[in-house]
Image (tube, rainbow, N blue to C red; front, side):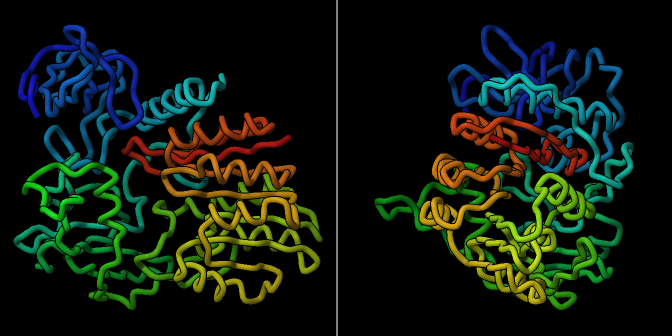
Length: 430
């Protein structure tokens, strides 16, 4: 850090940007300010300045407040705090409006589409509720064995579990216990009300750069490096429950690894599954693909529509998820769940056994050029694309348009209340 780091100044905030901040300008530079709202004048303290045209700051004092401001409901994530909650200082309606602005701007700038966007609560979730929605949470453990949350854009652990996101009872007693220093805890409260706690052993020490030397201690890792480290294989020890979480969607039961992927919001899997079934319009005897299928939640709904004379091919790279999906869908033999990388599989199968419908739910990085090209080459009549990152989602929507598809439907869900995150679902047709 250098330049303006630690400097404070008053600034008037403009529109929201993707990442939970508002954009302001000071002395010719762009400033990304967290903890403020559009139209507010705040005292901003620069937290990160690596030179160039922009820097990052926290709003440490509100000089002129927005009418949308409310007392912050997350005591962990204020200025200088954790990165868990970005928007709990705004009303729920204002939070959704901020997210809608971000999605509309990304669609315009990245995909070249002008689209009015509305962000809605997950089906069945109260519009004014901001806490108690998260059934799965991952907690880092500090050097003293205390579970907590990462400080924003840092590996430092804040030993404070008062974030309002988790469902009631999920974190009970965790702060009072001591865990393995450097480990991570995965906590899942499943649909049967059973809590599972799995401790992931501390990651292997970094090996350094290509020259084999370790990087200096304390150097900030990039977001990509932190995500890669978080998902690297680690030894698991079940500390509570069985480590096998039970979930239900559309009357079907899944039993999955507590450390595997499942939608974080307690009602999200059912909500998205219902929308996929509605938009797919798959008829008996037809064929569909479910790419990045996880444990096969969408594949199950597609298979029920296609019936035994149809076929659903589901592709997922995580082998444990494929095994869990096969167990849950064993009564649907016309579903073929395959453990493979979507990029490779889609490219090889783009022009064989063409599907009428393709559903994609890629990770945060999105599907990308190769997968979108393979899907459009397969020529489905309908594509349902789900994205948890609006930037990669907008990029993929633009790629579909270049491939001859148009955006026929768009739903954006406030699946992560109190944060800047949302879930976007698109229907694309030829």
